[in-house]
Every structure is written in C-alpha cells, then in structure tokens.
Length: 124
Image (cartoon, rainbow, N blue to C red):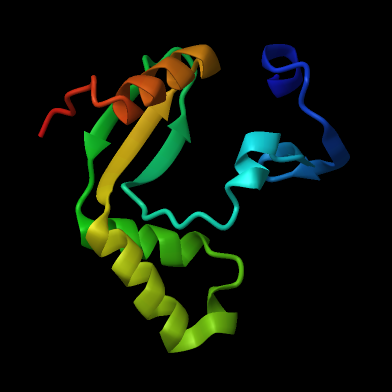
C-alpha cells in the first residue's frame, strides 16, 4: 500500500506472515537524516486501530490507559526495567494521548497533516 502512495520509498526485505501482515522497513527521507541530531520532544502519543469503513477519528485517551497500552505492546519492555518505565511515563506525561480509528490511509495522512499544522480540534 505504501509503495503505491509513495513510489520513491526504498524498502528493505519483507517479513511475511506476521500478526500485522507483511512488514518491511524503509529508508528515512534525506531531510530527516540531515536533521537526525536535532532534538525533538513528543507532542502526541497515538494508539491506532484499523476498522474497515471507519472514518478517520481521533479521541482523547487517559494517560494511565495510554501508559498501560504502551507497556503491554512493547516487545523489549523487560530489557529496560525501571529506567524504561520512567522514560515511557515521562513521554506519556508530556504528550497529548489519543486513540485513532481509521480505514483509509490517505484520509489518515490528511488528518495528521491538519493536526500537525494546528488546524484540527479534537473533541474532549
């Protein structure tokens, strides 16, 4: 799907039959590589969920629920122990936490562009 939307992406090897379908990495865009040492702080933690036919929709999520969701879905959480928990909690604490339901990638891209530009109100 991404190759159709962004044909210039350079994909690495694909891993078939994962719980998420076919998974592959792709090279970061050159402007992002040039900015790799620039410090950035998180603004949002988004918990995505695909649902066929659903319009793209963001909704607030409690920080505690967001933290537990991230802990339960982290594949290497046990490696980092208390330090990892503290770092994850700090990211959640400073971020707006949102659930995101969608069915259309182009619609999702438009929604996040509007969010990043400050042109989207999220219902409470």
